[in-house]
Image (cartoon, rainbow, N blue to C red; front, side, top):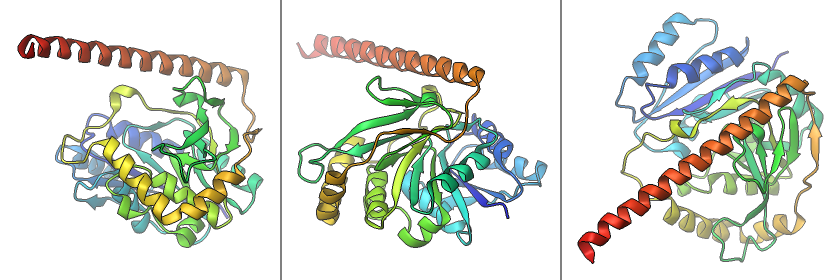
Length: 319
């Protein structure tokens, strides 16, 4: 029997992109799929567009979930709780700026978990890392190293780059997209809501999985997520840096001994080819990687120039 797939999309005011996001999911979805768009405080035309898609495409069920502008962590949990977690299946969780483009996605995810066996837990399709050996005691707010990235979202030249169909174990998978097997949700639960509204929820969930005897990892598939498609949420939430500092402190308080153990144990960085890749697909992935990296440089150069201009203007008035 085919496994069930739940697609959970956290959405905040994405009317310009949401049709493309949902249509890409529907291209990946098969007979045992269910889509859960989580409308998190949307005030634009996003819901109307989703309703139109629901009316036009009846083959794959789409169930709306509503959240009151609570940000990604609680939105994901709302989707996980709404979705059926019984039996054998997987939750593919993604943000509203991700276009899945691997139309054999479900077949590949099933092949990965069949290959790895029942102890494969939480998996990112984008990005991951291992804990630094002093993760439990260091002053670092992001105590990670040995990063691995999908070629389609490759930003860090020091990371190990994965081509589509390749997998590597990593202790901490990082969103998005990510995969939560149903049995993981039943056994481990959902993301820790005391870390809301965001920051290090992947980190904390990974520790719980490792403590329960699972191994986590990164599995590369094809998708698109441009920098210009980023967040639309304006104000109302604590800045990122204080949240990271607060949450890593909480995680060390809750899981210090377990974090020390899993960090000391480490994880292999060997790369495995789960699904073969045609040469044309390899070339396309490398082209995408180059374009992504160039876009990142343009983005940061623009930000640097803008900040320098603001400082220059400020100096005129402040002396």
